[in-house]
Length: 353
Image (cartoon, rainbow, N blue to C red; front, side, top):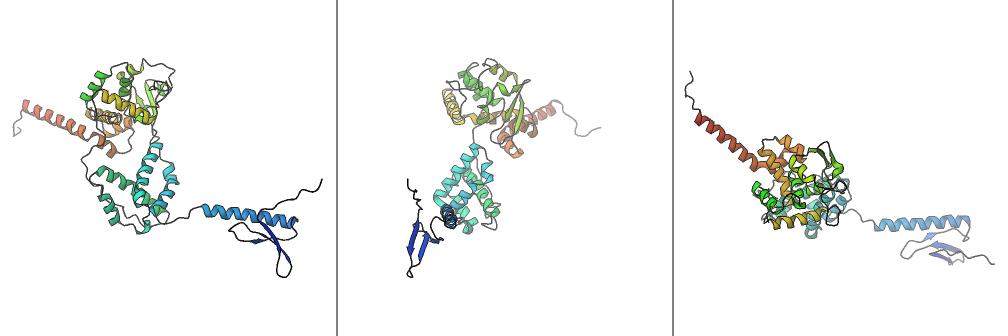
């Protein structure tokens, strides 16, 4: 059996104009690399291997996009950053959707030339929907902070920009009348009643409600690790919630399960709850509004902001105040009138003895 001939890819062997043999490694479109002869010698094999590896590195480098100066390039860097990777899955979807939509229109704008005047003009187009404008402002400010950190720009042109005034309250906060109306349509024993009790009595987001189960319950308390913030809470189970949980099987994977016995996805539960609210004649109500209703109830009971945060898991007082501003006003007004009534019933002389 003859010796098997070895084939070397992209090897070119020829004689130069002086009749001297030459060998080059030269891929299509690439630069030729001289190789020592004879072909197959240890020196040749080592040089050939280095040439092939060098070409692979060059190709990989060519495929790696270089950092440029546009918002589209900045967004690419942000999506690969630790800032983005630390967000919860729902926040990632939200941030990415808003910023990608922005880049559909303005992705080719140079970041280095972006000024406060440009930001005002872009946000001004959303002035009819101030909440959307304010949300975009927050996301762009975050993106430009990254540009400052990596040296793309010296300072953030959007720092200190004021939010647009808004009369919107976001998700509607359920009233006691609406809660009673929902229960009239979905009484104790129904899955809808359980969902309502679980959310309005723990104050948690739907992303946390769908994951709660018997494994989280101990000594009359329910443990929650919030998916969005990773904040750990331990919340007492009040009698109304205990009554709703008492009829559930102990081997269920979660308290709330689909008709197939599986835990809900966050979106699936939101859609299912939307249908239950519509059945009860409550088109303005949603699952997130129950979280706000819990904070409202706590505020009306006279709880401090610190006490409310211990249940809801909010990080700042400002976040809670957005939820409870109206409740606080009603509560304070009641107390003021009670004091006034007490003064009317017990008149005191203007001049004390």
